[in-house]
Image (tube, helix red, strand yellow):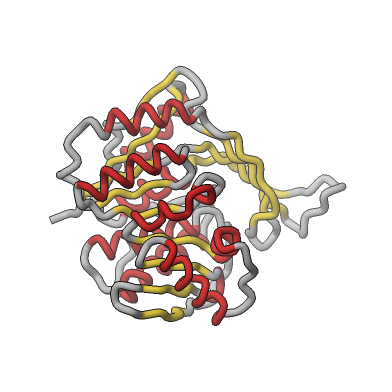
Length: 303
């Protein structure tokens, strides 16, 4: 039976410019510019559905041609959009990104949606019976009171809740809220921000994962880009490092969302941690190898 997951997060329309040569801030950089649907929450909702999870997405979307296009793409991948809150304006954000000739992010500007719309969508959803869901995934780029309410309700109903790191400005104000999560996944830079220290090698990364786990979710994973990831699983008193293979990067946007989705989809299915991370890495590899922000087809374990 397919697992059922509730995803709470934002939608962005991405404008991505990729330079053909190393970009120069004082020159016109020739390259490609593409528009695509994005946002951490949206990407994860699509990924989870593609990976075989029954995914319901709670968000706000502007009721215009662009917003309806977002819904159409999600529904194409079998995401349940019945909990999408349509509003007249500023229901979703925009993300302007500049990538270098290696596909890595140089700089970006994020225009945020009006969070009041998303708050309305969340509270409307939480008036319903949540017992049908096997897990909740929440983008932590939200007001603290929403993180507090959602994690509190999830804990009371004993629904596993997985934290999705985007902007950490809110969770930094009360890092102890991470302790309400089943699992927390972030990258090295985010771990450095939360712990107020630099991580310069694998050993320091493992220590960071362990320290974050003690502060928050008992299972904490820190991704290290081309060096794979480290993890601290306090439930099983285990820490470790899992390497990844080197691949050609086309566009790194969405890689972290894909890793999160692949890993969490398998944890929800009851797979062990290393099996789950393996699918997370396969998912990230697929997204890195193309210009898409999210998966468009399943990741097969034996391929």
